[in-house]
Image 1: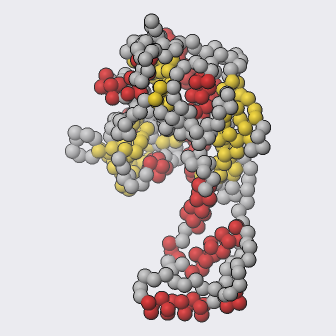
Image 2: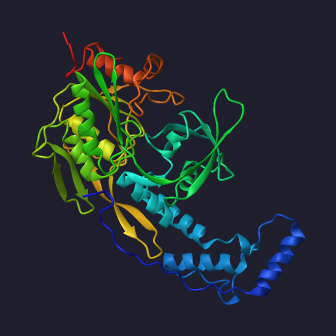
Image 3: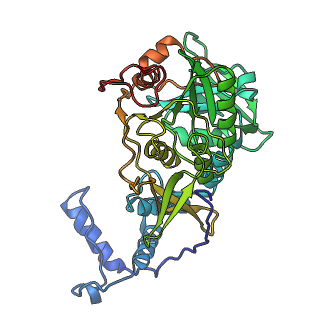
Length: 438
């Protein structure tokens, strides 16, 4: 089962048109001009209802009235964009449910991009980017991608996309503009530190396969395995990373789930199966009626028994919280870092008639013991904070982490101390499962 496995088509209706007295509106305008510019217009009401109490109305009918009022009376008709208004209305409606960051509305284009991300493939130029202090910055070019072949480097700041300034667009909009049909081109302008002149490149988009798993070896023969999301193929990529790390002599593992937004349920179960004994409980699913279903690890899996520590933070969500909670409650490894996001709902995709969709939370995730993740998150065993301005040290493209990068990451340092047999910050003894414990 996937987070977006279920779908159902739902129609959209609008209510009756509102009717207003032009004469009363005109009188209200005259009165307003008399008391000064900037005053608010008095509401125009039909005379027959001026003293009557409003009658109950279905909310969707009221929305229809508001929609029609805007179309019939707004002073600048050219500013009216039906698609933007519809998206804003549905988005605001879903925000009242309190499932921020999870239940949401996606336009047809956003839904396509969402599906691409979960599939692990997309059409683009092969750069991972993030937003830092209002700038769009390259995290890394992907191996054998058009961006790598063009010489794009980590740290390059994206200035323009096809002549449009990148700053102010926001990360999602920049991603949308950089992606596009295979075989088409996009022109990007970057600023590189230490270089005065901007770098302009025109890249041809192609199908890119993203591996959500990367790893590197840390001091003490400790494999630092980063899982960025639970997209399709995450379990197989993790298996390969563990096998490569063990072949390279790894004696322990740091599983980094920081800033992992989640993904597919089957991949969460598959990932947990690489660390927990067969038939271990991974999570419970609870529907709105209260019934629960138990999900277990793969009975045929061959999990690693290397000592491990799991890194989590406020960006660890959804499937990331499921795996972290399962590892914690099965007493497989300690969690280090900060409380997770607290997503904890199963998303069901409801397709709408215009190609857009609502991703709606329809079930709750619970830990194996029945703890609710939604709004509570998963608490770490060892709490270690990381300043906002310090990015987590993560292996990218298999490149080694420098001593300076490791030294700046207090959470990673705490994990290394645990696995090397030293007391973690705030504790008086090594955590269970560490290497070389006295």
